[in-house]
Image (cartoon, rainbow, N blue to C red; front, side, top):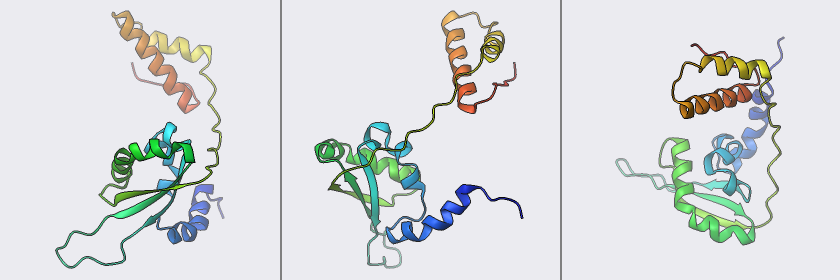
Length: 164
């Protein structure tokens, strides 16, 4: 029997707990930093989504849910100001207007787990990228393309292999 990816096993283990908190999946919890940005995610965590108890009548627009977020006490005012943006980003991530209200619960927020920063690309990769963009006449554009190539190579953790 082949080994299963850890992500598949985590989904199965977390699904009941997330469902109890109103989350259909782990996407909002797992991708919170990407959804709201590093600044907001450092001081907040989504706790649950409270869905309306009443089902809409046929042809009636369903009521949006309420997203409950834990925030550090001193950061609550900042999060309240950013509330409309947070709702927009969550709904954009979900693909529909699922959440219409944000409720803040003040309390301690554990720091996000530290991510390992990928190693910078090696000299050979940087030289190959420089060679690929050497035909660009504008020096500012050439430098920007070199930085982009280096960033892509670093994010992939492997040599960038782009077509010339």
